[in-house]
Image (cartoon, rainbow, N blue to C red; front, side, top):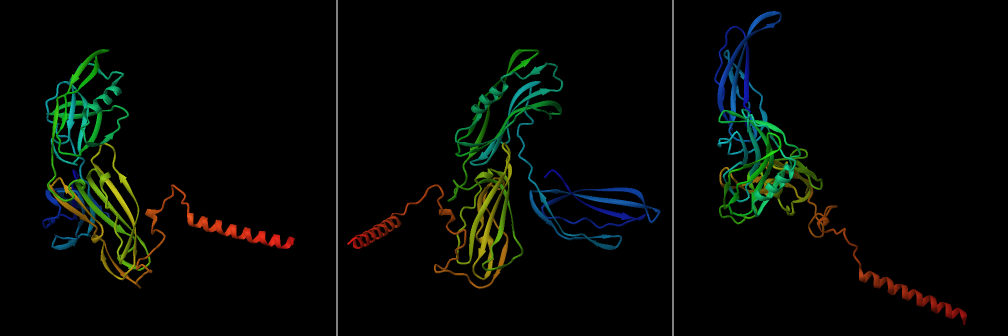
Length: 407
């Protein structure tokens, strides 16, 4: 979301007149820039004017920029419609304006107040001012120290998503216009399961300076207030965060009974993507649904992520169907502090003869797959007794025949 959308108009010739640029839904109009130059057209030198309008995205999501017209030199020029996606920025940290010493051990939190189920990023870092003349070094037991600190800061009754830092790297940060070298030691996202506040005590990091002389650095304690979600029948089950839904299906909206097609749903945003689930989609007399898998794309220690769901849908009855009536996801929107619902947008038009069985339900190769047990062999007692009785009967007949021939 930190990138601007630009609309550029190029005019050739000495003079030009240009109408104003339009308003675009989901974007805030920004500055307008003009540059002038020269170029050659058909071997002749001519002036060229480039007018650029900047648009700043208001929120993340997928947008369709409609076709619009701009009057240039008394001629209406039409743009082509286009589809763009604005990605949400990863949640930053809230402590970048804190007071930091020339060398400091800092605990940073992305937020000071969150809802139950909302993720908060916590990072442990060593800060050293660019003006610092002391030779700071990490001791050999830095790995053991980090693991011990991680155990101390992990809140009770919370889920953890940790970014595994395999090597300590240097990055630069400016705080109050002063340059610092920063070394991140630990980073994780925590999702509280109840409304108990998260308390991070003051922590101590042992460093070496000016050779092997040990020097302890102490962090400041942190408090993150956790708020209960508003009352709702599904309060303890809904995902919490900021999410968007995109759906797509195989082919166009016209479908035939008895011919299955693939249907995909992509949910993206910021939150614990692992708990996102549509549950079991129930079959009805019109459509059968078979989940063919899901895929999660969310790095450890990151709030942003994507989860993809794939389905097979089998139409059974002719008609028009809105897939949003089958696929919906209730969640708590932390931006609006309200419950919201994501629904599928695709619609289908089904033609063909109704498919029925003796149970008025279509049964295909997927039916009963959820109940199939592959971890044990079933032993059918009735079949075994029937086989044994037949074996005894045949044996008795063969014995009677043998005795009769002996006589």
